[in-house]
Structures are given as structure tokens and as C-alpha cells.
Length: 100
Image (cartoon, rainbow, N blue to C red; front, side):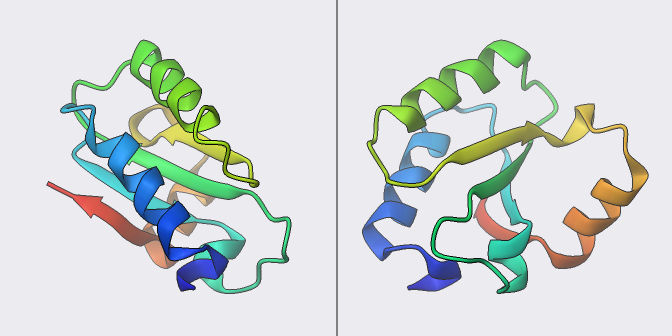
């Protein structure tokens, strides 16, 4: 179970993200990337892509909700993060889930 996720759930998350051609990279961060997660911890993912929009973020969030995975998946657009500490955290501990 990578990152405390059932393999099938992780694959389904990545499949949804890959359906959007503007997602160039998906990076897992937070407690699941650090290995400090608890059973109910959410799944934090930063999306990279020069052309990604807030509409893409919304559509992907809805599609992930429809998977009925028993965990909350939180998506962020990397290029819209304005907190240096969060960017540093993602760059340091982030784990690539998808890279085009």
C-alpha cells in the first residue's frame, strides 16, 4: 500500500488526473508523502501544468469525488500557491504520482 493507499485507489486517482491533458505532473505531498499519515488522513496533491485553470481543478475534484474513495483528495494548482513554505515542502518531500 504505497503512501497508505490501496493500490487500486491510487491507480484510479492517477487515471482521473491523467484524463486531463493539461496536467503535466501530479505530486503527492503532506503526511502521506512523509509517511506520517493516519488512517483517515487526506490525500494532498499538487498539480503542475502551464495551462491548468481553476476550471480544470474543479472538474478534476468532481471526478475524484465520484470515485467513492473513502478518503478526501485535496488538489492544488502548483503555479497558484503563494506560500513559500508550502512550495518548499512540496519540492522537498513531494512524491511524483504522474509525470508526462
